[in-house]
Structures are given as C-alpha cells and as structure tokens.
Image 1 (cartoon, rainbow, N blue to C red):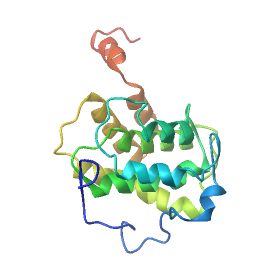
Image 2: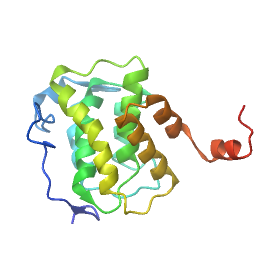
Image 3: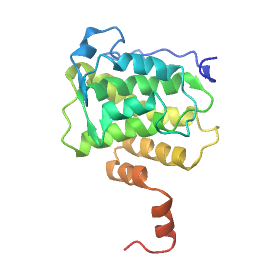
Image 4: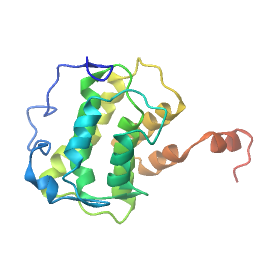
Length: 192
C-alpha cells in the first residue's frame, strides 16, 4: 500500500506497440525542458512525491499538486515540461487503486486544453507518442476509478478528461470552469 492506496500491477508502456516511452525520471533531458520558473529538473521529484500521495485532497495548496500546477500549467500556460509530465501523472492514476485526487483528471485535461487553445509550445518530438497515449489513457483511467465516490470537482474533472480524450476541447474547458455559481445560474435560467 502506497499513500493510502493500493498499486495495480501494470507497467508502462500502455501497450507493446508504443514507439516511445515516458521520459525517465533520471533522464538529464528534464533539465533541458522548461516550466514556468525555469528548468524542469525538479519535476521528477515532484512526480515521485505524487506517486506516494495519490489520495483525494481538499486543500488545493497541498503538495505536490500545488507545485505541479504552478510550474506546469501556470495561469493557463503550458510548457514543454508539461508534456513530459502528463504521461507520468496519467500512469500514476492508472496504477493506483482506491480514491485519487481530481487533479489526476483535471491536470491532463487542462494541459491539453492549453495546448490546443493557447500559445504554448509544440510537444517535443521525443514526447509526442507518450503524451498522446496518455491523453487517450484517460478514458481507461475513468473506467478504473468509476466505482469510487466522486464529489462534484471529481465529476467535472472526469467529464473534462473524457472530453479532451475525445477531442471536445471547448466542452472540456467549459467543464473545468463550471462551479456552483455557474451551475446555479444555469439552473435558474440566469445565463443569457
């Protein structure tokens, strides 16, 4: 048992036909990749910490999610390191049995939304395959975690993850921005 959750006995790559794997934690290329505050040499340690802290989190400023969000999806901007981190985040969710934090779905969805709608960089060639496979894997991760209790943030994050995996970027963005205020306005026909 790790971080309050049981680990599944799956290994990456997701299937034997994968042309490239995730960027290894010890690969020196992390220091060549950039995030919001400079080189991404710190990202492997944050991902390692995430792998042992997978449970639901009521505090959005709790580590390691706070640092991952602020470095890799900073105010809607993404970086080349974001694309290398997403496969690890999706893989950790795949390997974890038991409740996981909603960010395991919201973060990859937000990165893909930003990639498709914002001025972010292109995915480095070395990371393209693993990144796109991770986005596709979100569908299976939803299925793996479907029997767990979902609060509203998890439900919206899951729906957004499904939307990006199916190419519905505008719907995914709307889902990630939906909150109690917007839901109330929609229910009361206040939205014009």
